[in-house]
Image 1 (tube, rainbow, N blue to C red):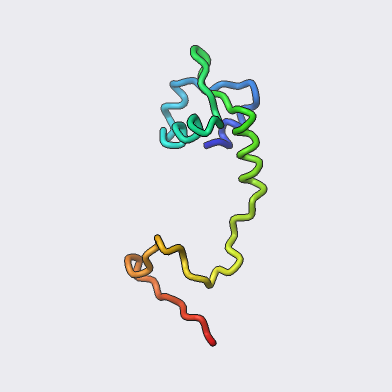
Image 2: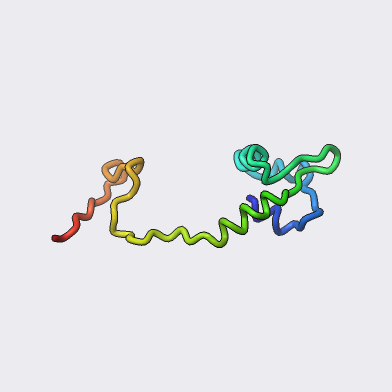
Length: 89
């Protein structure tokens, strides 16, 4: 969602009407984190912090260093009927 604002440009605003076409959950998060700001009679606009956050996200490698390691403890392999891989000695 932040990329949508970035692609609009620094001085472009997204109207409330256009904003309603998107999932609203990212809007609240971006407003709380000050990645976007709202201007009365203009709409939503990306901030300097928002541009910085997007650049950091794009520059961050999110690939796992060892994909054979177990998934997070919050992920239940039994619930998804996945086989648990055992490390060989």
